[in-house]
Amino acid sequence: MREIKTEKYGTFIIPDALIINTKYGPIKLISQTAIVVPIELVQANNYNPNSVDSKNMELLKRSIIDNGFCYGVVTIWDKDLQKFIIVDGYHRYDEFKNDFQATEVPVYVLDQTPAQRMAATVQFNRARGVHQVDLMGDLVKALFEQGEDDAAIAKHLGMELEEVFRLKQITGIAELFKNQIYSRSWEMQEVDV
Amino acid sequence: MQFMLKQVYINKNVIEAARERMAYIFDEFENICISISGGKDSTVLAHLALREAHKRNRKVGIFFLDEEVVYDSTISQIKYLMNMYPENTVKLWFQIEFNLTNSTSIKDGQLKCWERGKHELWMRPKEPDSIQYKPWDRTKETIRDKNKGFGFYDALDNFQDSRQNTAFLVGLRATESPNRWRAVSKNPGYKDVYWCTKRENGSVNFYPLYDWNFHDIWKYIYDAGLKYSKIYDYQYKKGMGLQEIRVSSLIHEKSFKALVELPEFEPKTYDKLQKRIGGIAVGHIYGKENKMLRARTLPKNFKSWREYRDFLLITYPDESKKDIFIKRYARYLNNNYVARQECRQLILNDYENNLPVDNKPDPREETIRKWRELL
Image (cartoon, rainbow over all chains, first blue to last red; front, side, top):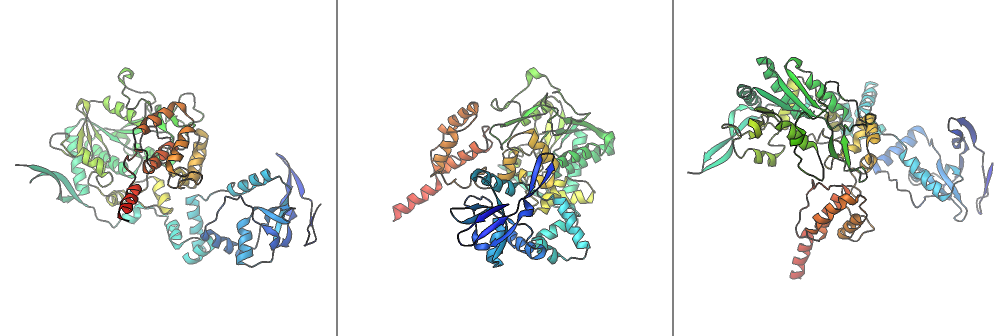
C-alpha cells in the first residue's frame, strides 16, 4: 500500500498490486490498482510523440460510449507539480475531460524514474498490432451478414463509407473491368511530312 | 521527301493485334523466352505466348529473375505461370547471387540475395528446379557499375547475352513508360518491326503489349479467368489508385514505401524481412512520412537544406561510399534546391545515383530575385 499526500485534495491510497508468477518472473497486476481522482489533478507529459488523427478520436469517443471507460490512465505522481503526470492514455483522458466533460477519471500510479517513464510511453504507443487487410475484409463481411448496414459498420468501426465499400469487395479487382471494351490497336508508321 | 514516325490507329483491337504479333514472333523465331515479374502485364504476356506455344505444340522459356526479397504473393503468381502449360514451358527461374540496394538502411546498404552460407536467413528455400549457378562464362561477365558490383540488370544482361537468335518477350507498355517506349520505338529493331529492339547474337527484345492500356490488361485477366497477384486486391482495398500499384522488390529506393503496409498485407513476409536485413522497421514506420526518408520537410534543427546536407555528409557512416557522394556533389550547384535532392540521396543511400539530382538554379531564389528587381 502506498499513500500519496496532496496539499489540497487529501490523501490517496494506492493498493498493492497482486503479483502472478510467469516464465519471465513475477509480474505486477497494475490493472487491479486503479483509483479514481479529480480530473483536474491529471496533466499531460511534455514528451509524448504520439498523435491521433481526428477520425480516430471520433472512434475513441464511440468506443467509450459503446464499451465504457475500460482502461485507466497510466501516470506517475509529481510531488513538485502536485499532479498525476500521464505516461500512457493522454488521448482517452483528453477526450473524457474536454468532450465528455467528466470531472473524475481512473488512474494507475506507477513508481518510476523519468527515463523509465519515457520508455514506458513509447512501449505503450508502439507495441500494438495492425489489422491484416484481408482479415479485416472478412470481419466487415461477417458484420454485414449479421444484418448491419454499411452506415452502421462505418460508424462503429470509425471508417469512411469508401473503406467499408472497398473491404466488402471480396470479388477482386479484375471483376471491375469485365464490361470494358478492348482499346483500338495502333502502330508506328512512317508518314510523309 | 521527308518521313516522320507517327502513331496511327488501325482497324483492330489490342487483343487481336497482340495475337497476330505473337504468331509473327513464333513464325520468325525458333527460340522464344518470356520475362516475367509476377505483375499483371507479364501475366497477360505469358498467357498469350503460352496459348500460341500450345497451339503449335512448341516450348517457350519462362524467365524469372528472383530477387528473394519480394512479396509471397509474387512467388505464388510465378509458380502459377510456370505451371500453366507445363508441356510447353521451359522453366528459367533464376535464384543466383546478386546485389540489391537497401534504401532503408545505411548500415546494411546492400543485400546480396541468395547469399551463400546464409541459407537460414533466406526469405524462403530455393526452388528444387531453379537455376542456382550462373550458366555463362564467368570470364566474359559484364558489370555496369563497379561501385554496386554485380546487380539485377547485370544478371539480366548476362543471361540475355548468353543466348543466341532468341526472341525475348517483355511486357513494356507505351502508356505506362512513355519515355522508354519513345526510346525503343525510334527504329525498327527487326526487319520492319518497330515494337522491338535489336540485341547481340541475333537476339531481339519484343514488346507485343506496347499499345495496351491498363484496363485492357485487367479485362483480359477477367475474360481469360487468370489468377493475379493478391497484392493488387490488397492495395486496392487500402485505397491505392489502380495505376500506382507495383509488385516489385520491397527494398529499393523507389519501392520502400511498400514497407508501410507490408505487415497488413503479408505479416509473415514482413517478419522474415526484418530478420533478413536491417532498416526494415525504419521503412515501415517512416516510409510515407515527410521528414525521415522522403526529405520533403526540413528537420527543425537545421536552417537550410545546405546545412542539413553538410551534416548528413559529415555523419555518413560508410567511409567507402562517402567519397562517391563528395565527388558527385562537387560538380553540382550549391543551392537549396539542389541540396534538398542531395539530402534525399544521402538519406536513401543512393550512391548508385538512381534518383538523379536536377542540377539547376533554385527556382525560388530566382523568383525572389525577380521580385526584388521589380520592387
